[in-house]
Length: 252
Image 1 (cartoon, helix red, strand yellow):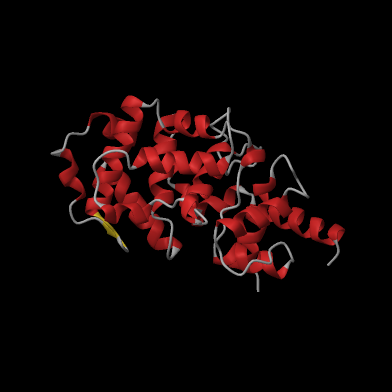
Image 2 (tube, helix red, strand yellow):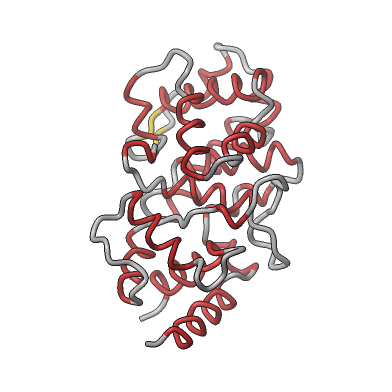
């Protein structure tokens, strides 16, 4: 298809899937259960952190995470003691196990007690670009004592990872429109800087549409496909995640 047809495809399928009905079957439903800003961003970060595999399983395990924190994640992050972390014993989502969950809580506690919270940390990184923000966040997240096994559960574009789950989380927090799916909570980070949450679905459809030539789903591919999406909307390129993902998952 030519550029005009491609634009129509992206716009039409974005309109189709960037709707409130999208929430029901997507991990974004987890932060939508909260109203306090910090609860939204913490629950969103934790849900996004386990967002690989079958979506019903992701959602079920993310809800279990919230249950273990009495559906008050911000309060739990601020006030939990080492003894409180025992509540996560037995938790598991694929290779993300109790010890990883416990470390994630401790690291988030460090971020909220000493660095102003998730928004402040990413806001500082976004003064440069999304890649810098993600690399800086990774460095801070693992700046406290941890088991090396937990590092594989937080992607790092410095290692050429596509960082799909983190880019998805950032889309949730930063994109701001009137559709009611993404939150637009972080006002000092620009949607124009966001990078596409690249996965098997968006990669496959992106290649089929000529938006992506690179074969691997890595950070270089993220840069390529996002650069091409900016040709259609430079102020909000990642809105087309709805079109690529929605079409990839739902259309024959």
